[in-house]
Image (cartoon, rainbow, N blue to C red; front, side, top):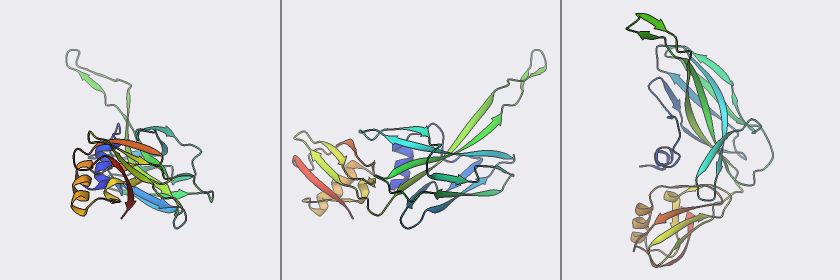
Length: 230
């Protein structure tokens, strides 16, 4: 499985899907290098037969030391979405512009969800006993997420693989930019062993200044191995 699918499906476990039968977002993952380009586009397609009202929100991903995260509304973020809301006719597409609006440098890479919130009014429930329609008055909100990574050219990951005598390992990223384990080459490991290690680790997203517990088994002797992007 490629790193984008692994990251979206297996690591960033979100409450709502990135796509559904009624909505398709393309692309689902974007990277913005603030020193080369600050503008990108997301295209949202309404595949349903109903008009679709959407509101675009920017959600900041706050990573913990262990690589887990929480989300919070980033109302003051330099990452903005235009238009902030739209109504899509059945079968239509809407292009949303994603733009980074500041010249200020980042201390480390940042990750966001662009969350498209769809508000749906629940249909009346039919009571077969009283033969009457009952309005529940309940609104159901469905969210669709695209993932945005923002970084600059001066930032670099700094990954260290630490393995103990029991084959337990820790992937530490002491750098200022995110990376994926599949992009790494670890110094001091033969090519065939390298491939076996990466296959065992899997494709892991590693935020800056975080660590991830992994299992290496007996593939490597205990020690420290520095990882560099290939």
